[in-house]
Length: 295
Image (cartoon, rainbow, N blue to C red; front, side, top):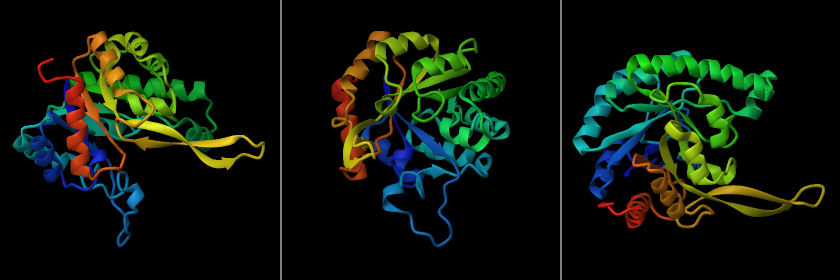
């Protein structure tokens, strides 16, 4: 396995700082976040949302075609590989997806995430039922798969809570029958703590050739102390350090090995218990202790 970091989780660093620091720490690769993320003029970045707002390691989607050379220069200078590209373009935005696929091909990054619809938001916005949203998304993904094939890259569907693909079973329904050379699934350990949990080995076997990538973070559920009108407790999820969440990273990597997976494992740690540089260094040390370099 090879280890990389998704720069959504490195908000304090510029792209150059992110690449250089991760390379010095011994990471194999980097997964760049690409999305329009600029605070309004004069607005302060809320500390609790710095991963998602004003993240300095983000490449802006607008004008991204003009940044390909700079992305390549920074990545190559650090000696890092691309584990993929962390795109945010909705699968329904065909022009946006086409842009991300082309940028991925130009970088030689091989694969890029396209985002799946958020079920509740889309139902409230359009009135579409899950089957209607699923069918529409399948048609869009078929288009993306064809375009990815033309460009020699792969479009990735992430297992993500609140979307129409929170589990391996749901994702397989969506991608089944498409060419796994050009459409794949990102299995995400931390997201599954929130929604979509299935036995990991069973999920890997179910996905088969569609298992294209693995994201690792951790999460936990905590009692808020509040109750609903009926008296039942209200719980909420929060991100946690790799060792401290409800999921076992060790068991997860073991299941990947049992399945024969030897691809990228990308860390996106959104906990804040440790300062960023300590957090990334500690995460790599932890991963290496579970998967020695010689393995």
